[in-house]
Amino acid sequence: MTATPAYWTRRHLDLLAESPATTAPVFDPPALPRILPGHDLWDLWPIQDEDGANGTDLWMALSAPALGHPEKRHDQARIRLLGRHGSTWTDHGNAFPDGASPGSREWSGSALRRADGTVSVYYTAAGRRGEALPTYRQSVVETRPALIDDRGRILLQPDAEHREILRSDGSMYLPADDADGAPGRIRAFRDPGWFRDPADGRDLLLVAASTAWQDRFTGAIALAEQRAGAWSLLPPLLIADGVNHELERPHIVVHDSRYYLFFSTQRHTFHPAGRAPTGLYGFAAPSLTGPYEPLNGSGLVLQNPAPAPDQAYAWLVLPDLNVVGFANYAGRDLRSTGAGRARAAFGGTVAPTLKLTLDGTTTAIAPITSTVQNAPPGS
View 1 (cartoon, helix red, strand yellow):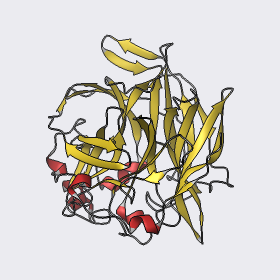
View 2: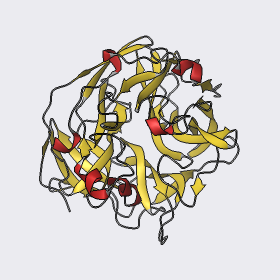
View 3: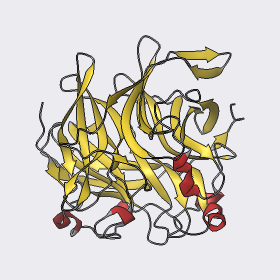
View 4: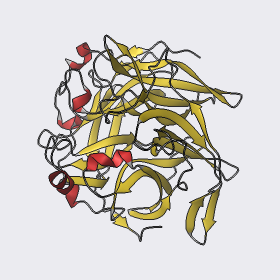
């Protein structure tokens, strides 16, 4: 199974126009209730069932102590296990024991519940275990712990093996091995999104990756296939062709016999910076391997409103077409401001859920009214 990559080009971005159908309502990130008091939380994903359905009771997210500048959270990120029952969230603590990951931090991924009672968790190992200063080497890791119910508290088997299953090959995809940098300025090989193709039952991973572009790099969505228990890289599904160098959290939703490929990216990672808004973007195709067409002509599915260009990020479209993301910054351009000002404007929790409608390659979004409630945190 080989895909001919689709290309996201400047010609597509020339068709981008602000519209109520693709613009989120304004909200105030720091005013939202926190699921994890005392911790920042971002990049949520549900533990899916093997048939691809969205599991609604168990979720994962990245978390870090809510201290200092919010941009520093990436250097302390851990995967958190959460329960969800309607609008009520329950904290089950860190998903893995200290030191279990081969990296120094745990970045985004995906998960599915197996029929044998285990959970396959695919995530990004960033850096190396035990390093004195955080580096930005990235690889894809799988662990398959048993799911344990300890008198109502949900745990993952603590001694399960964490195994590197993919890293960038240096040929199709540039090595993601930067020694220093920051999110938005580093090469990518992260955010593995599990997908089972209903056409043939094959298990696949979509990965945010980088390919060569002039003297820099450009964003791509890599594809990997599992054969006989091993994962192998395939050519990319999408290349941003000098448009953007960070196509994050790629995932596919099949709806009305079309394959909808979604990803998130930020305004400062476009070439040039600010060429298009921070948002959820997407393409559609009749099959996994294409041919892909940009949604709404430009690829834009959902953007932050102009008065609040950074209010949310890291959106995920669920099978029921609900769209979840996290509350980022009120205001603008706070990534490089002082820690106190940035912290006061940061959300660090779940953003208001939106509803997506799909009609071929045309999309629209609408808000969903809900109130987030939280239960006592885990250990």
